[in-house]
Image 1 (cartoon, rainbow, N blue to C red):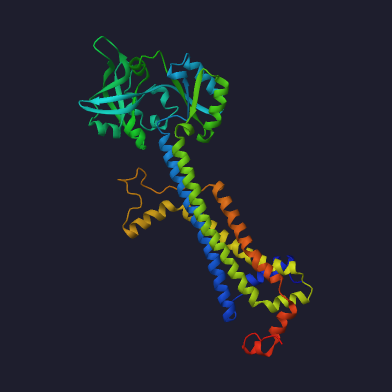
Image 2: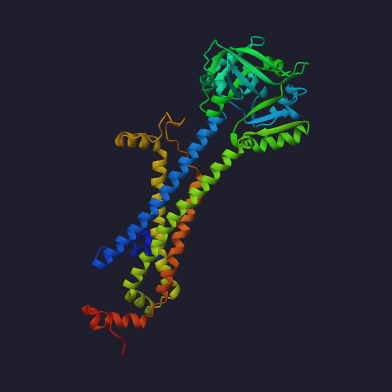
Length: 440
């Protein structure tokens, strides 16, 4: 009966010998030390890759969490009249926008800066006039907390405040707040600002400090009368995917012409997201250097086997192996160590990133220290969002660095002189452990 052929036996002999050298190292003190150094190099690559995946996943999670909270009270895309003027026909603009397949909802709005006064207390805020019946189509806040918005009725002069803004003003539901609009009348006695007293009919918590401390909501009709506008200033649009905002805004700008201004959330919050991207790139570069240091430990890991296996290399050369084949053997040995470390790092990194919401609370209980204190950070849990756009480059870079680290030791192995190696290997002094004899 013909014995079954193993998968390794089907590979070129360079791969077979390189794989054998990778698994070797259990016999002999010198080989055990080489095996230990190789294991340390693999572990270094593993930890570096895992750390890079975990850190970038956590940064992605924080970015997603802040983005979702930021977009909880504002729409993905806004179409406004030029110069802040009212749109000629907001329903036609909304209908034109709804023709795009990416658009999932549309609602009119008015937005302006104003002062909120309670006695001597003054606070600046963004006052936004909305239609409570349509606002749920474009903002998650209106869907999560519809009770407060339901109290906004035309002519009732009611206002809904962010929770932090209400605490700064010291007001509760049922109290009165004076809204002072920009501009005003200019009688002979001097400028008289437009102002109106509103009843606080509700509070909201968006989870984003900028909204909670600086946003007030009115009914659309009340806002138009306060700011003396003939209708809505613009239309808010909700999209199927937030990443489509820039492309959709560009298409709408081309479709609607120059009579309107189109903006999206990536431009409105551009500075914040650019800062996060720069921080993410710098963190990736720093952690990639850790992976590079671990990968180039393979140089020492392969230099010692090359020195230790000079006799094996000489025998292979006398049997007809070319220098390129000898080089390929040690490239395979080093590349296998890099592949094992990278694969292990990807598995460990993804495992920790997927369960970080369990690992962090367990660590907090074990150490008695809160990693994300709720009194300081709005986010009280550690978010994580592993993305293929991060993991694939990390894997490719780690494998490429590991391969580059094998080139010099493998080149040295290909330069071994068979006659010289066998001469010293077979000398009585060498076998007796007296060291390498001086040539005659």
